[in-house]
Image 1 (tube, rainbow, N blue to C red):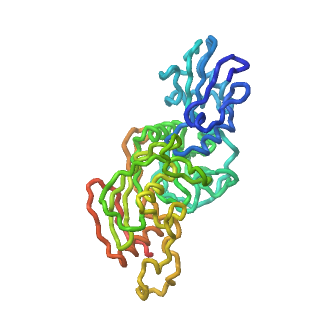
Image 2: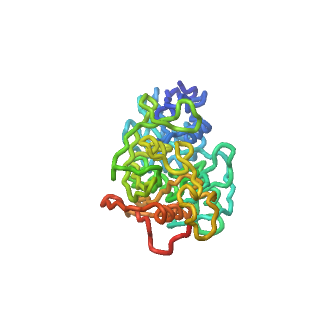
Image 3: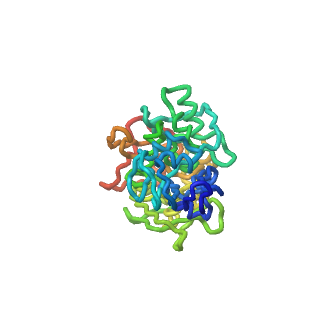
Length: 399
């Protein structure tokens, strides 16, 4: 596409080109809505949305000023921050904001989602594991989505964060929120997945954390209870994933051009009669990766009816007559997918210190594991590579 003002050729690459949708309007400027849609439809959080611009004439214009012309929904200050955080290259090299652009220069930029509309703050309880001036780490509750999407503009983690930073703590995500559709959201968890997630409170922290996720230096560990007895103590699941060819909003193993590399390491922590507790290490970050990989090896996650799991009433696990408290055998024991983001480890974006954060099991999953231990002949498996603390100090939650 030839720009009508400066006569520079622009082309979309990365996730933008892969969708078949151009990221530019008729004037050669980056289209705000197209960028937003690309972020909404990414198959994983490791994939950046990238634009590429190639100059076909000698402009002699500063890089930051040129980007202001090309990306009108971002301020010059925000674009200078992108340059400082290595999100922009010129001819494959790290530039300065003052770099002068010449004929033939190729500018590539990784872009955040633009603001869609104001996100209303809502008083939703959050379990905070850590917070400082730069970031916040949560133990996300199940049955809540991370950020507004489609028609759902309320009841999300982002709405809850907006409230917290406005009413409960100092600082906040306001500076990030001016430029990002989902303030501070660096990575996501599925609606019914609980556990550790980090959000950024400053733009600098956001970009540096995002870079760690994209370069796969973040250690992500999960716990899941799956159907069946997993025989191998440890294994690598290496199966490419992509969008399901027929079912909207689902993903599947794809051995064609639509498949992207996806690797998961599992380690058995405990075996029970009919079930297994596994620790999972994500080596890539594809959407629904753990859920599909476990289903593909014949051990879907309990409660994950999207990918072959079953929601369990108490009678499915507890023998008849074994309940001492009179609870109904038809009461739900695990009503959502038994998947928990148990541990997140990354370099603090400002201090550089390597920091691990562990999220205790959410009460429903904690109770499920306790019931399995009581009624399903538990057998622990020792592993030096397994690092998640299943039973942290403190009183256990009753099932």
